[in-house]
Amino acid sequence: MTSLYDAPAEDVIEELTETLQAESALDEPEWLQFTTAGVDRELPPEQEDFWARRAASILRKVAIDGPVGVGSLESEYGSAKQGTTRYRVRSRQKSDGSGNIIRTILQQLEEAGYVEIAEGEGRTVTPDGHSLLDETAADVLEASDDPELQRYA
Image (cartoon, rainbow, N blue to C red):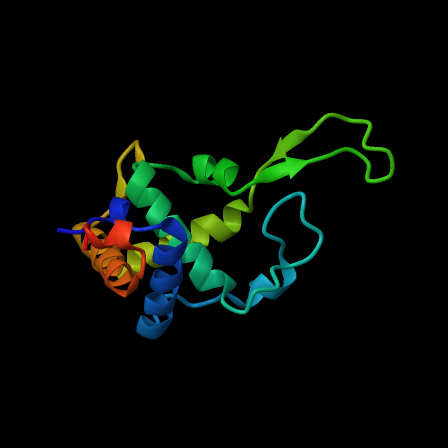
Protein backbone atom coordinates (compact mmCIF):
# COMPACT_ATOMS: atom_id res chain seq x y z
CA MET A 1 0.00 0.00 0.00
CA THR A 2 1.28 3.41 -0.95
CA SER A 3 1.78 5.96 1.79
CA LEU A 4 2.51 9.66 1.90
CA TYR A 5 6.22 9.03 2.38
CA ASP A 6 6.62 7.12 -0.90
CA ALA A 7 5.78 9.93 -3.34
CA PRO A 8 7.78 13.10 -4.09
CA ALA A 9 6.64 16.05 -1.97
CA GLU A 10 6.26 18.54 -4.82
CA ASP A 11 4.04 16.21 -6.81
CA VAL A 12 1.89 15.37 -3.79
CA ILE A 13 1.40 19.04 -2.97
CA GLU A 14 0.52 19.83 -6.59
CA GLU A 15 -2.07 17.05 -6.76
CA LEU A 16 -3.45 17.86 -3.32
CA THR A 17 -3.86 21.50 -4.34
CA GLU A 18 -6.08 20.46 -7.22
CA THR A 19 -8.06 18.14 -4.94
CA LEU A 20 -8.66 20.82 -2.32
CA GLN A 21 -9.75 23.31 -4.98
CA ALA A 22 -12.16 20.78 -6.51
CA GLU A 23 -13.70 20.00 -3.11
CA SER A 24 -14.12 23.70 -2.27
CA ALA A 25 -13.08 22.83 1.28
CA LEU A 26 -11.15 26.08 1.68
CA ASP A 27 -12.27 29.66 1.31
CA GLU A 28 -9.65 32.24 0.47
CA PRO A 29 -10.19 35.19 2.83
CA GLU A 30 -10.73 38.70 1.53
CA TRP A 31 -7.78 40.07 3.51
CA LEU A 32 -5.28 37.86 1.65
CA GLN A 33 -4.79 40.49 -1.05
CA PHE A 34 -3.58 42.97 1.57
CA THR A 35 -1.30 40.77 3.70
CA THR A 36 2.16 39.34 3.22
CA ALA A 37 3.29 35.75 3.66
CA GLY A 38 5.92 36.72 6.22
CA VAL A 39 7.62 39.53 8.09
CA ASP A 40 10.40 39.81 5.54
CA ARG A 41 8.04 40.09 2.54
CA GLU A 42 7.00 43.38 1.00
CA LEU A 43 4.16 42.30 -1.29
CA PRO A 44 1.21 39.92 -1.04
CA PRO A 45 1.51 36.45 -2.59
CA GLU A 46 1.29 36.53 -6.39
CA GLN A 47 0.32 32.91 -7.10
CA GLU A 48 -3.24 32.40 -8.26
CA ASP A 49 -3.73 29.31 -6.12
CA PHE A 50 -1.59 30.41 -3.16
CA TRP A 51 -4.20 29.61 -0.52
CA ALA A 52 -4.88 26.05 -1.70
CA ARG A 53 -1.19 25.37 -2.29
CA ARG A 54 -0.22 26.58 1.18
CA ALA A 55 -3.07 24.54 2.69
CA ALA A 56 -1.87 21.40 0.89
CA SER A 57 1.66 22.02 2.10
CA ILE A 58 0.52 22.60 5.69
CA LEU A 59 -1.61 19.45 5.64
CA ARG A 60 1.40 17.44 4.49
CA LYS A 61 3.65 19.06 7.13
CA VAL A 62 1.18 18.30 9.92
CA ALA A 63 0.95 14.69 8.74
CA ILE A 64 4.71 14.23 8.71
CA ASP A 65 5.78 16.29 11.74
CA GLY A 66 2.56 16.25 13.80
CA PRO A 67 1.50 17.11 16.37
CA VAL A 68 2.68 20.62 15.55
CA GLY A 69 1.61 24.10 16.57
CA VAL A 70 1.36 27.38 14.75
CA GLY A 71 4.70 28.57 16.13
CA SER A 72 6.68 25.69 14.68
CA LEU A 73 4.91 26.08 11.34
CA GLU A 74 5.73 29.81 11.36
CA SER A 75 9.43 29.01 11.62
CA GLU A 76 9.07 26.32 8.95
CA TYR A 77 7.50 28.74 6.46
CA GLY A 78 9.81 31.62 7.32
CA SER A 79 12.98 32.55 5.54
CA ALA A 80 16.35 34.15 6.12
CA LYS A 81 16.34 37.89 5.88
CA GLN A 82 19.53 39.80 5.40
CA GLY A 83 20.60 43.21 6.57
CA THR A 84 20.38 46.28 4.43
CA THR A 85 20.06 45.55 0.73
CA ARG A 86 22.77 48.03 -0.15
CA TYR A 87 25.73 46.73 1.82
CA ARG A 88 24.69 43.35 3.30
CA VAL A 89 26.64 44.19 6.44
CA ARG A 90 24.46 42.41 8.97
CA SER A 91 24.52 38.67 9.33
CA ARG A 92 21.53 36.59 8.24
CA GLN A 93 18.65 36.32 10.65
CA LYS A 94 15.63 34.04 10.64
CA SER A 95 12.20 35.58 10.13
CA ASP A 96 8.91 33.81 10.68
CA GLY A 97 6.13 33.18 8.21
CA SER A 98 2.69 34.69 8.67
CA GLY A 99 0.98 33.17 11.70
CA ASN A 100 -2.45 34.47 10.67
CA ILE A 101 -2.30 32.68 7.32
CA ILE A 102 -1.20 29.42 8.97
CA ARG A 103 -3.77 29.66 11.77
CA THR A 104 -6.64 30.40 9.38
CA ILE A 105 -5.68 27.52 7.09
CA LEU A 106 -5.48 25.14 10.05
CA GLN A 107 -8.93 26.27 11.20
CA GLN A 108 -10.35 25.67 7.72
CA LEU A 109 -8.71 22.23 7.55
CA GLU A 110 -10.30 21.45 10.94
CA GLU A 111 -13.73 22.42 9.60
CA ALA A 112 -13.14 20.21 6.57
CA GLY A 113 -12.30 17.30 8.88
CA TYR A 114 -8.67 16.77 7.87
CA VAL A 115 -6.97 18.15 11.00
CA GLU A 116 -7.85 17.98 14.69
CA ILE A 117 -6.51 19.54 17.86
CA ALA A 118 -4.47 17.29 20.16
CA GLU A 119 -4.93 18.95 23.56
CA GLY A 120 -1.70 20.49 24.78
CA GLU A 121 0.35 19.17 21.88
CA GLY A 122 -0.78 20.99 18.75
CA ARG A 123 -2.62 19.73 15.70
CA THR A 124 -2.63 16.28 14.16
CA VAL A 125 -4.11 14.78 11.02
CA THR A 126 -7.37 12.86 11.27
CA PRO A 127 -7.87 9.45 9.64
CA ASP A 128 -9.76 11.22 6.81
CA GLY A 129 -6.74 13.46 6.28
CA HIS A 130 -4.37 10.49 6.22
CA SER A 131 -6.53 8.66 3.72
CA LEU A 132 -6.69 11.76 1.50
CA LEU A 133 -2.90 12.10 1.60
CA ASP A 134 -2.33 8.39 0.94
CA GLU A 135 -4.80 8.34 -1.97
CA THR A 136 -3.13 11.42 -3.43
CA ALA A 137 0.30 9.81 -3.11
CA ALA A 138 -1.01 6.66 -4.83
CA ASP A 139 -2.41 8.75 -7.69
CA VAL A 140 0.91 10.57 -8.04
CA LEU A 141 2.87 7.32 -8.20
CA GLU A 142 0.49 5.80 -10.76
CA ALA A 143 0.91 8.84 -13.00
CA SER A 144 4.68 8.94 -12.49
CA ASP A 145 7.04 7.83 -15.27
CA ASP A 146 9.99 7.26 -12.94
CA PRO A 147 10.78 3.50 -12.90
CA GLU A 148 12.29 3.72 -9.40
CA LEU A 149 9.00 5.02 -8.00
CA GLN A 150 6.85 2.46 -9.82
CA ARG A 151 7.74 -0.27 -7.34
CA TYR A 152 5.87 1.66 -4.62
CA ALA A 153 2.68 2.01 -6.63
